[in-house]
Image (cartoon, rainbow, N blue to C red):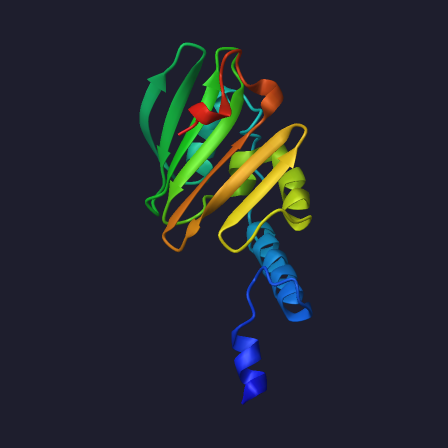
Length: 171
């Protein structure tokens, strides 16, 4: 009876031997779900304006309003799941950031494009718990968190941010 109680009390971020294995297994499962059966798409993060249309078709999204800023344009994509994706395009014509909010995480392979593999490698390296994932690399920053049916995240390339734009401006 005591052994059963101990197994129930193991937390995802527990540094003990069972918790560590559980966290590792969950990270591996998350990576497999992201990688399994998802076709490659054109690069979005770091891609050009045409990649926004390619993403819309790939993830079966409806185009929402486009909001112009002084040094960027934000394009909204509404997914069938109810998740809303914002893609930020600089005046130089590059997608420098992507944000999402909704019931589910969107297809990150499509949205991150060439930055997906560095994201997976960074996610496998740690920097997360059961409510939050943080990947910080020299040319990629990804933050994702929330709980079931209320997930949000953002990914951006620091070197592509327009002058005067702060990651805090992402919504």
